Image (cartoon, rainbow, N blue to C red; front, side, top):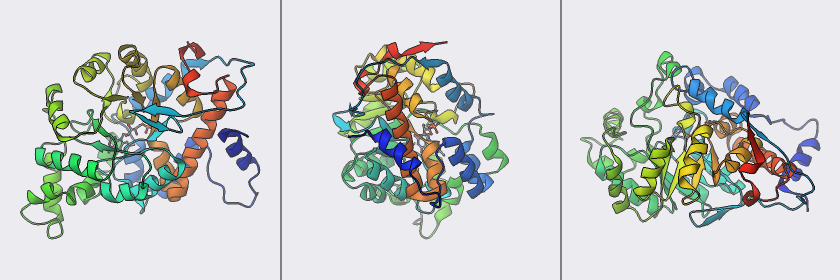
Length: 385
Ligand code: FNR
């Protein structure tokens, strides 16, 4: 039976000339998204911290590693599956938590969540989603889903969201550590664009009983009052490692820490009982001039040594990027902007197409490198130059 990548590739080649053509490369999805979106939303997605140095570094670091393919290895039948936190997923790919998806498409997270479920890729719902975590969970059904928490100043809201996530059927809590505040984002400042100010991306707050109980008037009566309270509590720059005990007290779910870059922080994460780590610099959106996520991964994986699942995002664009991240110690990777461009251009169908193409590219790259399963991919495939 032909492999996943071969099938998708054949479908592309056999496409009727008059069929509506969707982009294949991420760069072309981005160009088409640019044509659809106003400056504000487009740059909110495509921009980064400062002048975008970290974003560029994320992409460039993949170029410094080369794959040396191996031959005569029988790669006819392949297996892309991985097991993370006791769950087996068919592919080493998850959709990263991305907030305020309503700014690029009216169907927002519902469309991307359905696409993820359709493609059998886990979806990570953001705290800052445009639709409630319950509605998104419903769209995903019984397919895998994690919830990402922005850990803010109001403990009641934090505890309530953790409880809701558990009740809605999410199977892990991702805590994003790198957003104690928003960074200096030049494009967004130039465009005076922050969607939360227009009450976009706060559905989880508006629907939260603890959040609502803190407001003088309900959000239906006074949405700007709700926005003000959201802005006050959204992040908490005073948290430290010992505070993690609070999360542990309020959830039975595995805790995955997102935004780790320093090997010392990976040590601390393990010491404080994290069940997984996502090496990430938030797609270059927080610290300009930061270490690339791939470089950080090589250092962090020395520390974790396979003892806890190590995921990675920030800069994954192609199958070869996935292969390199896995070879350098990642158990799986996440994509952010690529699927948001798919959503902007073609809604659910666009997200599915982005996922399908990326997985096909990965499958073919894995095979052509002489490997037939993710478990066979290791550091010996790569050379640093
Ligand atoms: C993000 N990211 C993010 N992360 C998170 O933990 N919670 C969130 O709500 C968001 N929101 C968000 C919005 C937008 C528009 C972008 C582009 C990113 C970061 C995201 O999860 C992921 O770390 C990066 O997007 C990965 O990098 P790439 O794939 O975009 O290069």
